[in-house]
Length: 329
Image 1: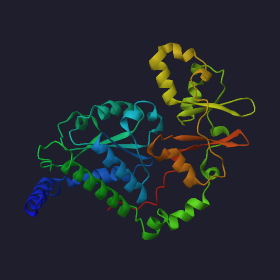
Image 2: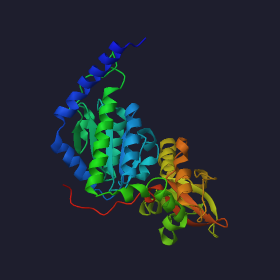
Image 3: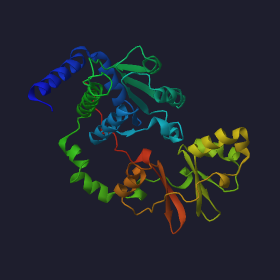
Image 4: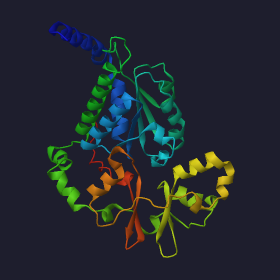
């Protein structure tokens, strides 16, 4: 049973474990991290593995609620199709205590090929991850609270402290006001979600990436790449949706069939009953549908009216807007 004495010992040990973070954090590098994220015109994508992944999700949520566009990315899902989410003006923030998480190391070169700037927040500056990212933020760590120095405890607390300081620094740089904050939370923000509909944010017309079911994969690669949606809407002559074909479908097909996959018709690989949405649906409901309640996240939603495709909603486009910037102090 935990006694007052044992509890006091744990508190003292945690204080000692956190002390290097407060005394040795490189403030010059932290300022560079803040500036890079502040000047990023795209999405701040945050990722991590295991307990660091949970912290990454929380940091991303805090960034969003305080005026910085952000999204969490599972590194495993990224390597299985979700890389289509990235744009060249995005920034990838990776959290790892050891800097040796293989999933993150595997993700890095693919993100860089997309033109994404990478930042690693690690507690081991000699790690492989630290050596591969564009900018490394050392998170000084004493000892884990775990008696075996194994379970992520103090290290995740440090990551959380870093994320909170980062979010609030950006909040101050953006001169994010109480009114702005209220707009993002129940009350004021609810009013905005009620007023905005899918039709206000969807892509339409020539922006839509389309293909026919009989098209060969090799014949639609340009459409898939140039429209930068990470998916193709497979429609008939009357614009009725027959399915959806994604970057992930392409990757899986090439893994299974090699170059022969490029000769296959879209209809053999597409998802025939994708999740769709109507244009008059509130944006709040659309975002919840795309997030999938943590079960299955989708980054694009075909928008249908009377059974016909009239638009495409991208999760990338419905994150919070970046607020008017001031010069970072």
